[in-house]
Image 1 (tube, rainbow, N blue to C red):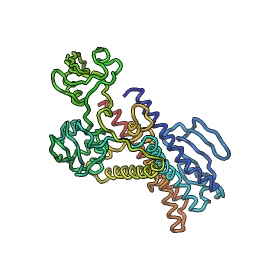
Image 2: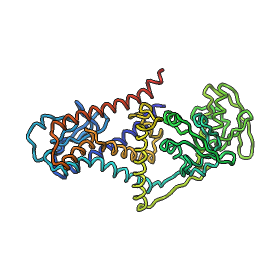
Image 3: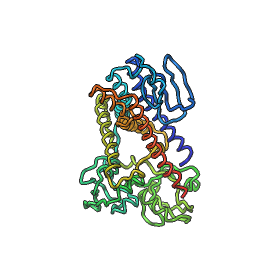
Image 4: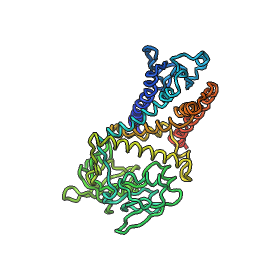
Amino acid sequence: MTTEVILVKAGQLLLSLSILVVLHELGHFIPAKLFKTRVEKFYLFFDPWFSLFKIKKGETEYGIGWLPLGGYVKISGMIDESMDKDAMALPPQPYEFRSKPAWQRLIIMIGGVTVNVLLAFFIYAMILWHWGEKYLPTDAVKYGIAVDSLGQSIGLRDGDKIIGVNHQKIEQFNAITAQVILQEAKSIEVVRDGQEQSIAIPDGFIRALLKQKEPFAYIRVPYYVDRFEKGSIAEKSGLFKPGDQMLSINGLSVPYFSDFAKELRKHKNEKVNIGVLRGQDSVVIPIQLDDKAKLGIYPQDPEKFFSFKTKTYTLLEAIPAGFKMSVDKLVKYVQQLRLIFVSKEVKVSESLGGFMSIGNLFPEAWDWLTFWEMTAFLSIILAFMNILPIPALDGGHVLFLLYEIITGRKPSEKFLEYAQIAGMIILFGLLLLANGLDFWRHIISKWF
């Protein structure tokens, strides 16, 4: 991965998290102000020892910290991550969080999660309104699939046409891998040589699929030249032209991009004859390969060969569709978490990830559609994780407030203090574990 790609991915991640954190904390800030509760600080990122920027307006200090692990609002009279014991030892003041009715404190605490849910719904609705919903129908994959070694290991072949997973039809081709994982599928149904077949999925396949973090099947596409990688063998030779159809290597027919690439890798440091169709003429191009056996030719966009569908939405149609999409994404995320705890195929050490894993979800080139899709999805994750009843998270505060509302008894401040400490230890432990696993997978393991 080049430095440019790393910077693009990091930039998208940083901007996305900044938007989510600021709006989440604004969800706490606004009801706190409405209920005349003093907010001492409003920070993007954390600021232990020093901050990158700060300004005070009224009773609130606004700033940007140097540690990009989230953000916070410091509300007077509240036991939070600041652990300000001195302030809590003083008599309660009317403007403090602890002096407000329980229902007001509850609204303040659920404000952040509420904003994240509404934000995801709003972003998905706007995506559908502006871009629509574009996908490749599974039955439009007319050349069949190209499978990797993992797909081949269970009996799938290049050219198979997938028609179902667990005997259920999958409308969108790019949803196949997710359905195999989330359903813990036992079979994939294909059409091969005109006959329907059921391919059994053995134990261990889903675990291997999660570990490789790539689909096991791609669409099979005819190989037409689009453009050349700068400094590549193909560009330097000057023998290939945009629009050429790549057909064969040393007389062996390999008309699809995946087949061509597989065959080419067998001829490292060799001279090969590439058969191409240029207009109506058949041309044979001799070319010397290096130890990478790559020509450096980008194929033409698959949209030239397949009938992609784009469902358009009016603004009024996009609103309920955006809500439905938000719910669907949440359900699938919960299903993924469930697999970590109940599936024999899923291991925490292989599935849990930190900032590197999240950053790798963003594309290598800046793309606003993908950026907003990822931001909406991360907003759903942030909302779900924050509402979990773990002390130090919003859900932990909500749990204790619900206990107070139901029983009429408020937990002691000493209990809340200990709960906050326990919650912070759990969260920091998970943070270290997730990012430690990332560090091991992406950096340390490559040294051995």
